[in-house]
Every structure is written in C-alpha cells, then in structure tokens.
Length: 306
Length: 296
Image 1 (cartoon, chains in turn red, purple):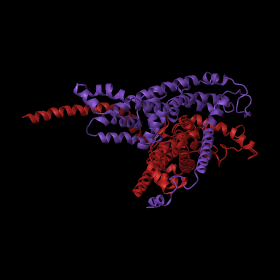
Image 2 (cartoon, rainbow over the protein chains, first blue to last red):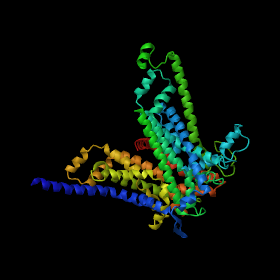
Image 3 (cartoon, helix red, strand yellow):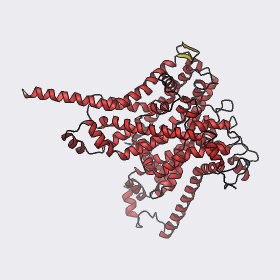
C-alpha cells in the first residue's frame, strides 16, 4: 500500500526536478539554438543557393562548389591558408623553447610572463596596425634598423611584394601567439613529476638530454594540443590580412576567410552570400580534418607510451 | 639498473656530474645570466612594438622619418583628435557597453546552465553537455552569413544588442563554471534543501556567490574577447556611431594612410584598457587559461 504512493510522490518530485533542470538550461539552449545551430543548418542550405541580397536567390545545387574549384583566387587563398600552417611547427618550437627558458625562473617573477603575454590580450587589429607601421617600406622602423646595421641598402617592401607579404603577416601571427602557447607549455612542464627529472639526473642525463628524452615525451599531449589549437587558428586567419595587406598585392596574401569575407560581405566583392557560405562549408571540412588528425596523433602517441 | 649502477660506482655527491663544486657554481651563474639576457631580449621584442606605437602617438605629424626612441616633444593633440574628430570616443563607449553587457549575460547564462549539469540528475544531461561542447567545433565563419541574415530579419542588425547577444553564452564559460561547481561540497545544498529551499534559491543564494573566483576568470575572458572581437562587429555594424573600437580603428587605416600618429594614438586608446585590466588580474587570467586549455 505504501510503496506505490511513495513511488508516485517520488515521480512527481522527480518530474518537477527534471522540469527545473531544463528551466536552468533554457536560456543557454535558446541562445545556442537560435544563434549557432539554426544558422549552421541555414549555412548548409544557403551553400546550395546563388544568393545575392536584393538581386537573386536561385537554387543551384552543388554549383557553388563547382565554381569554387574553378576560382583562381579561391585556389590562391586556399593554398595560402594551407601554407599558413607553417606557423604551427615554428610556434611549437619557439613557445616550447620559451617555456623551458622561463619556467625555472618564473616562480616569483610575473614580470616576464606579463611582457610575453601582453601581445596575446591586445586586439589583433591594433597588433596588425602596429606591425604595419613598423614594416612600412619607407618610414618603417624595421627597415630603418636593418639599414642602420648595414644589412640592406634599400627598404624592403615587407607587406608589398608578392613573395613576402604572406610570410611577413605570418611572423606577426607567430609573435602574437607565442605568449599564449608558452603558458600552455609552462603548465605542461609543471605537470611533469619531479621524480622523473631526478631519476634522469641520477642516470647522468645532461640538461639537453633531460629536455629531449624526458620532458618532450612527457609533454606530448600538450604539444598536440598546441598543434591542434594553432592549426585551427592558422586556417582561420583573417584579421591580420584585413588590417595589414587586404590580400594585396594581387591576392597573393589572401586567405580562405579573407576571400570568404570579400566575396560574401564586401560590396566590391559581389556579395554573393551563397557562394561565400559554400566556402565556409569547405573551411569547416578542412578544420574537422585537421582536428581529427590532431586528436589521432595525440592518442596514438599516448598509446605507445603506455 | 643503470641508476643503481651509476649511483653505486660514483662516490661523488649526486647532481654534480663530476665537476668540482666551484666550477658548477660559476657555470650555474653564467647560465643564469645568459638565461636572463635571453629573457630580457625577448621581452624587448614583445613590448618594443607597443613602445614604438606609444612614441608615435605622442609625436607631431611633421617628421615621419624620425626614428628617435624618445620623442623630442610630447603632444597630446593626437589623442584629442582621435578621441573627438575621428570618433573614437563614441566607439570607446560602444565597446564598454558591449563588453559589460557581454560579461553580464555570459556570467548569468553560464552559471545557470552549469548548475543542473553539475548538480541535478535528469535524462539527457550528458547529451546536452555534449551539444553545448560541440559548439566549440563549429567555426564562426561557417555560419556568420546566415547569422547576419537572421539578425537583419529579427531587427538587431546595426545595433549594439546584435553585437553581443549572439555571444551571450559560450561552451567555455559553461564548462569553466561547471568544473568549479564540482569542487563545492554538496553538504551546503543538502542543508539548504532540508530547510526547504528551492533549486533557484540554492543556486542564487549558495552556488552563485561561492563561484566568485571562476566567475571573475570568466568575466576577464569574456571582456578581453569582446573588446577585441572584430569580424562580427565589422559585418553587423554599418553606422560609424555604432562601431566598436576595433572596427572604428580598422576603418581609420585607409583614412590615415600617411598620418600614422593619429592611427597610433587611436591604437593606444584601444589597447590601454585591456592591458591595464590584464596587469591587475594577471593571475586570474593565466590560471583560467591553463585550466581551459589543458582540460578542455
């Protein structure tokens, strides 16, 4: 007699609890549903349309993708975005080196960490402007220093030559990110059990041997994490390009997202939103592939280690 | 084996690697010195560009070919011009509004959503958590154009609300607060529950105040993100009077092509608030960063 009634009371309060739980979640789910998931679904739909606002909206199937693969500027931009991945190994080496340099000294000193971290918290627009001024061909500080040192006779057009512009922008991306990745690696270095280092010392391992054979293998999860994060952001580079080169000269420094912006949003680029969104779909696929590779890499090495 | 063998064979104390103590000491000092020199050099490389920006922002417009590291005369004219004539004062206010609203909404929504995910049991909990986390995998550029069309349709394009509302909650925030909730002992809630408090009361009176450190971390992150967010405000705002700082300053690049002192002054105005905030709250910021990056 008692059990069913208590069971029912339990289920009523249980239902109430479930309802309450969803009450807490409703605002977040509503925002994400409306401003992320709905537009994502729309994006896949829109990529099948030839859509220029106020002009035309025609269903064209996969033609946008077909057009993409015959668009030379798209190919240049895609190639540049892939080239941009060069920053990943450079970032890993430099920020890991920086972390190892700074870590033992950092216990009581926040000054250096703050210095290295300031570029991370400043907006990319301002960072881009700063370096654009410094890299200016005629009155930039960088060329001036190089000339003073006698390394060059005439100013180098860092941001204004077909071969150089993209790499100059890359150097700014690396410069801005170093502090961020350094902090990740410092956390990684601190997670290594000190007994391991001590054991290596007892075995007579020198400093560089400790770094190469103990620290770096132990840091593998952190290295793959940095590889994933930095390659994702390298493939999404936009602000640097927008501020420093605008894709010039002759689209030689255009990237995937910059081309997407120019074609889809910019008045001069034609504002073909369907076509631009198709590019977004390509970007999404690319990012998924790289993340999958990164995660696989992370797991494989961990498996081997165990 | 090797450890035992070497420890047994060598009579010298451990760690000294067979060198006489004075040499180890001298080497250590030289090593430390080199380390500091390298650290200082890198610090100059990281801070130098901003110093140069500051120098330019204090300089008169005439001498663009001057490379003196200390400006001959200091003028605040550039700042006044950038703030008033170039319209950065209004943009500054816009950025503050967007930043504050963004922080408020993120704190509220994230801690609301994290509470049931951390503390209540209900069907679909894991699924919902994964759905929230899945948003981390979606690049913004994939859906920004449909999002723009949506904002136009619901009438929030070209408004500040349109800038911050789509970013009013994020997976990182929910995750951060959820992790923090797990560290709070359950006894507190149980006691409140016995006293007859409802879940909302428990959340508002007990959980929300106890998560202050996590909320502070999230607040800084959201503010810094919002302050430097560029692509979305760039596409959703049309009127100069509505621009946030990064958009306003980016639009000035073309205007001030050969007037870098104005551009530099505007840039300094843009970055100073965030740098000051960061210097004061460094520990919170970097602590939260490693938490989010490593466990996320």
